[in-house]
Amino acid sequence: MRDNGITAAATRRPGIALATVTAVLFVTFLDTTVVSVTLGDIQSDLHAGVVSLQWVVNAYTLVFASLMLTAGSLGDRWGRKRVMIAGLVVFAAGSALSAFATSVAVLIAGRAVMGLGAAASEPGTLSVIRQVFPDRRERARALGAWAAVSGLALALGPVLGGVLVGAYGWRSVFWFNLAVAAVVLVATLRYVPESADPQPGPVDIAGFVSGSMFLGCVIYAGISGEEVGYGAASVITLFVIGGVAGIVFVFIETRARDPMFDFHYLKRPMVRSALIVAFAVYFGIFSIFFFTALYLQEVSGYSGWRTAEVFAPMAVAIIVGALVAGFWVAQRGSRTPMITGCVLGAAGILLTREMLDITPEFGPLALSLMLAGLGFGVAVVPLTSAVLSGVPPEHSGMAAATTNTMRQVGAVVGVAALGSLVNSFLNADLVDRLDQLGIPANFQAIVIDAIETGRVPAGGDASASAAYGPIVDQVITATYAAFHRGLEVALLVSAIMILAAALITAVSSRGDHSGYDYET
Image (cartoon, rainbow, N blue to C red):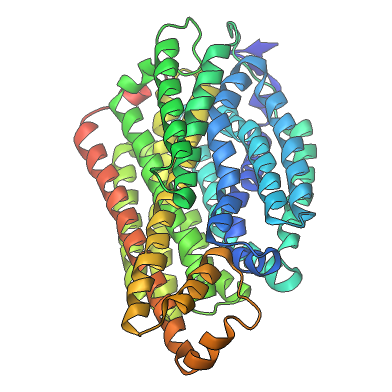
């Protein structure tokens, strides 16, 4: 029998259920960052440019973010375990496609399939926890474990990816994903209890379509604008379609009897603040994971192993921060830990910005990343707890999907917006530096094309090489300096975003405890 939509077995084995859903979380979150250290090898092997490399990252997070809200709501209606299992099967198929990819286009397609699987499987991890641990204090500690695993997956991505790439090449990352997904699938079938809304109501098809179209079009436009320009007709069209879809989505959801997303819950200050923090923190995390890792490999000459070493303390700090925050939230609520985590994370990003140069000192850089990781770990638990506690348990799939959608949207927007900044410096700033060196336009075009496409022509331009060979080192130095300048701006923007989210939380949620109205 079901009690509030969950099988009785769950109450007898909550620890096993928690361990299994965190394993599901691990495999889906790991792939958000594990490819960051494969980008250098992918660029060389598949001749991918900067924009293509961003799509290797963004294809996963784009589909993940666009469809997660739909999948979470379907899990409430059809069964969270059932949707989770379907997602794991799709994720494994996408991993196999990526491992066999012979071109960057196939790799991007494989990553998109993986994103579809992750969108279906990941929201259930939080909604099952909401069902299995109805008491707020117990749930806060469980969320500490959940956040520790999510942080471990995010931070371990570059570490584990570096080890695999260093030992076996970039394809081994996707074979590893396939193997882990298979093991987790078996564990889910055996140990995760089924649960669903006892009175689900009809499927909100209009909400599903308009919501997915809104997220997909706007995010896709933001990403593709980097490549073709934000004034391009295709990009403007996507923004317009997305905007119209968003208006339609709000209109439908505010009038639907059983909406995919109930806007009523956004009236709670802590819920609103938590969603803003989720966006900002993950916006900032990817400035670290994507651009810092790429800089260390391409400019500072870090191998996969060395990249793994410098990110390892950050992984440990995220885990420690999340576990501590679980007990903190259980005792004091979400507001103070959320603000503290944001401040620590922003401070770590700013320190990382100061430590990065052409040859960064390993120790200070690792400590800076560790501080950022501690802040991220502390922030994730309270923002998750605030949203889950502010929504009734029968809608926990909706709450979980909304939180994770904001995380993934923050990640996609972060990579897209910050990538645009970095690319602008790799073009405009680099051209200025090359002009100062007296490099002619034809040789500048070769340099810019090599950066944008990942292809260095065999022998280059013979006449340019013969005439300007002695200053090739100066050209390389100018390129590195332009990349460094772009990264500095990107990290600064990330830190400001996170601090702004902390300020909004401090002001708007003062004295608010409404997030606990739905405790049982």
